[in-house]
Amino acid sequence: MENKILTIAIIGMGARGGYAYGTYLVDNPNKFKIVAICDPDEYRLNKWGDYMSVPKEKRFLSEDEFFKEKRADVLFVTTLDRLHVRMANKGLDLGYNLLVEKPISDSKEELKSLSEHAKKAQKTVMVCHVLRYTVWIKKCKEIIDSGAIGQLVSIDHTENVVYWHEAHSFVRGNWHNREETAPMILAKCCHDLDLLQYFAHSRCKYISSMGDLRYFKKENKPEGSADRCTNCKYMDTCTYSAKRIYVDGWHRCNEVQDFPFNLITDVFPVTEEALWESIKTGRYGKCVFACDNDVVDNQTTIMTFENGITATLKMEAFVRDGGRDIRFFGTDGELELREGLNTITLKKFTGETKVWKINELTNDLHGHGGGDHEMLKQLYNVMALGDKNVETSVDDSIESHYMALAAEESRLHNGQLIEMSKFRK
Ligand SMILES: NC(=O)c1ccc[n+]([C@@H]2O[C@H](COP(=O)([O-])OP(=O)(O)OC[C@H]3O[C@@H](n4cnc5c(N)ncnc54)[C@H](O)[C@@H]3O)[C@@H](O)[C@H]2O)c1
Image 1: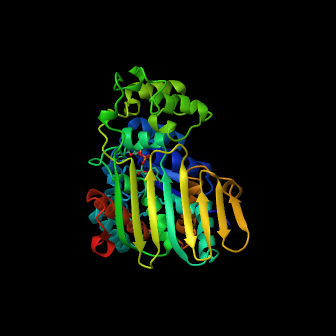
Image 2: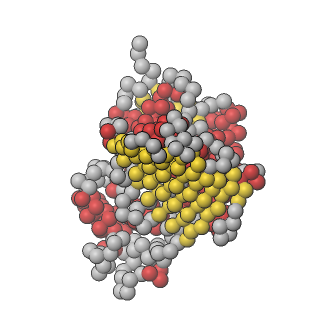
Image 3: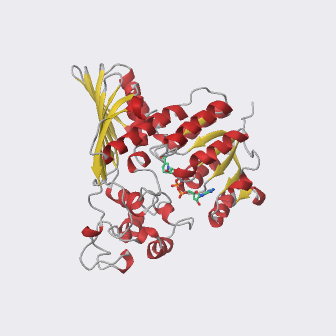
């Protein structure tokens, strides 16, 4: 039997819509065909339009033109955070099934509006909580649910953001300023909060959070430093120098065509010249102590779930190596995920310790540890083959957004305890 080809329309041709998902769709022509794209940035629209072989008349600079009719089976909404719900709701009204990037929105009203729209339209909405689809999260879930550590009592979760990633996204980049975008606990950690509720099999009952912007402030600007790294006498020595992060970093990473290098330039494939040009003229070359950033660089959140399980979540900028570290404490043993060290360790209180190497569980760790691609495989199963198992539904996702927004409200009130049943209303 011939494969069904799922037709895809994408709005937002940046790092996610273009590179992370678009390239996978192009690489799997027996399952997907990209038939229409939209982005007001003409260069990006045509760069990706050419790469994806989208006819010129199906490349839209205008959102209004794009939404004049339904153009595909599925719409990918991969614009920046505050545009998602407006576009998703328009898509639902036209009868699309949807893939929506996270965070869905930082407004409770918008979250509710998407949930209601999806129910009314009776369409499938998948949210890009890509980590749920990784082999390492699936393995941990399988071990916990098998009862191997007994009854789960608590979870200790650290999201190692990494010093350069903090500077890239939350000081210089898209998520640097609270007026313009979602708070960092939502932008960066709605995945983590989603995982905590997923592992706990329960909704959050109480949450409290503390944290601040400690370091990336004007008062920490080194004596005699310039506002742009390429003019600065510390260009070769500052930890956060754009030249060290993007130019030296690119060479150190074997000149990959990947995040964060492909995000600071539209030149494709990335070249050293393009990286220099970007840091000489663009936002990613600004001194980290001279940006108009105000989001946190450290935040600690504690929570309890309705079934009694407790958890902590630390979001840390000041670490060298990335990945999640998650420890699960059960009545019969411990389970430890060290993503950066490539291990999952099961320590039963009686019996042998067992270690799995993450890279031996899969041969695709590309893009969020393989999660981006696994999610698209699942999307195909759901939207082309009728599989009912939507791992990352809009309502599950919204619950993680409520946790993040409540954590932020708590942080702004010195850690005040928030009761989730009241917050959700
Ligand atoms: N799932 C994940 O793990 C993950 C990881 C990174 C980013 N994200 C999310 O993905 C989304 C996109 O992030 P990105 O890094 O690709 O951003 P980006 O800035 O690279 O891309 C956004 C694109 O949207 C375009 N755009 C702006 N207004 C538009 C409009 N009216 N119509 C059509 N296009 C418009 C911009 O021109 C840009 O090309 C964000 O919400 C982000 O939080 C999710």
